[in-house]
Image 1 (cartoon, one colour):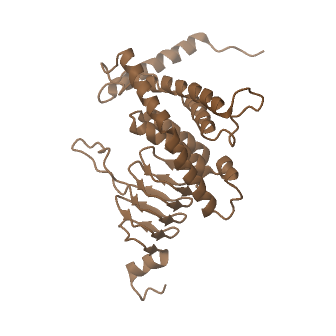
Image 2 (cartoon, rainbow, N blue to C red; image 1 turned 180 degrees about the vertical axis):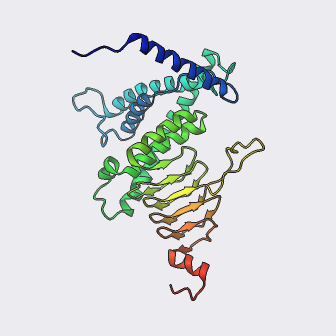
Length: 311
């Protein structure tokens, strides 16, 4: 027979956890209040529905037995998912900053949540066009791709950039927690870590993708192709007079149009990789690269050690 837990002991644990929670809030600078956060599970469902609304045939939205047309089924899906998103946006806005005295009036929160959700809805046609260009780039850039349908349904790079296209709009609209939850959901599923603040142009293709990291202030142009384990990261993290990290500074690379970055390359700092350049595998780059330049391990060693380095 299974013995039940001691209710007195459980009550003591719950009380101790309560003390720790309250102390943690007071240690924050500035002091915080307990707030509800958006639901990761709910947002995962919402983003899946929005993906279906963009590609209803390929991602299984359409019900052949329904009397509704394709457009009507898409509309119904959008109503459900966008209403759900507005609820999650309102939750984030209600706990804005989480500092004492910073709570907002309910009517103001709903109004702002509606405006933010409407902005994403208005952006959906443009997101679809961008994703079409990304899918086309994957098809033409990968000889193993047999069809566009295979790319939409299977390619982790497409899943990651789809989440990013949604997350980036929401990040710009001022709901960074929701944006980060969406991007981290894709990160968990694909191994591709794209910060929602990164600005990425059209025809973007991540091949394979595992281990790719793209920082929050990175700027990526059109027609860029990168491979697995590429990092577009920060070289240093400046601190202020109080010893805190200075946030929001542009600290990640700018990658111009039609650049190819092969697997394992690491590019750090606010450097510019010029248009049409190629960065070879496992190269470490901390300086800007002129347009139409090829950087490989051999060339990097030659620049460091000279012509007689035995390369």
